[in-house]
Amino acid sequence: MKPSLIWVLTALLLVAVPFTVSGTQKKVEELPDVTVPTTYDVEFKPMAFYYEIDPYLPIKVLLEGSGFVLDPLLGSQVEKAVGRSAFMADPGILRRPVVVSDVYDLDNQTYDLDVARYRQKGVASWEVEILDMSGMIFRILPGKGSLPEFIAWDGRGEDGKPLSVGDAYTFNIHMTTRDEATLRKGGGIIDVNGIAYENVVAIKESQMDIGSVYPAQVSRKVADYYQLVLNRFKEGGYSRIVITASDKEYAEAARDYLTPRLVNTVIVVQEDPEFPRLQFVFE
Image (cartoon, rainbow, N blue to C red; front, side, top):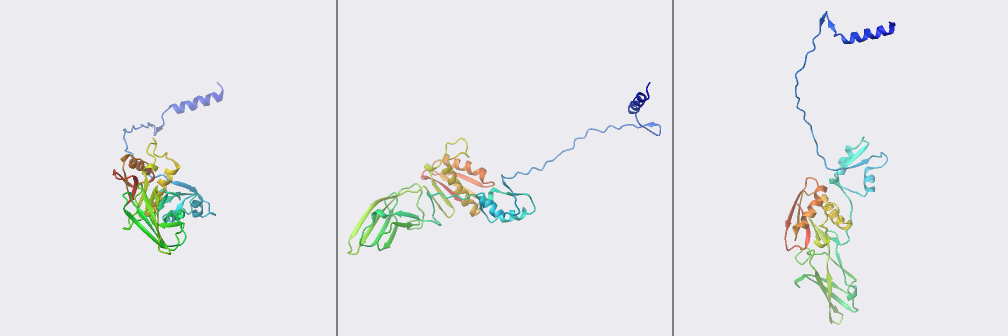
């Protein structure tokens, strides 16, 4: 037998023979089966936006370049991101700017009545009389001199209450000439799709989508309406929304759209047959 084969057989024999200590075979103890309970700490976090940090590009510039408007709370998160390669921003403090031309922000914007076609020469004073749906006087806007092309109206009545979205208003114009003759013009209609003021956003129900199988799938116009609601809610630091509509289905559709976008927010829906609008009240 060749020497190499002898060495191989010897090695196999040593592996097969149990190790001994002081001439006594070591007994291998069998451990009992023990079940060790395992706990997992699961932390649920809302969806977030992640950005790669460029040390030469300020975070503010980076986010604004992505189309976001910055909230004051964002500064604290930026500070925590120092020294990291990525920055995480909770969407709860990020909001996209949106301009909805047919929704009037009555806190910062006026509704301009187009009265250019009613202008007359020789007018000394004028008065615009705004009427509600029942024909009652809602607001009177007076002025001196010639009638301008546009008259700014803050959207509120004589009692300070805002107009009701979904209700049609009309206006008449009374003009007094320099020789004290009286002229009357009428027939103008005021009809807006939405208003925002204080802690309220109101949109015409006819402008909103409710038939989509997937709540996230809405038209661009409706998405802008919802973004306006989201922006005002976040800017005001509110924690609860009450949605009212003439048909509960409209209110529920709005709730389904907003819920995944507003984490830990209480959203209440209610029905009021007198409401021709979808109204969001922030609390």
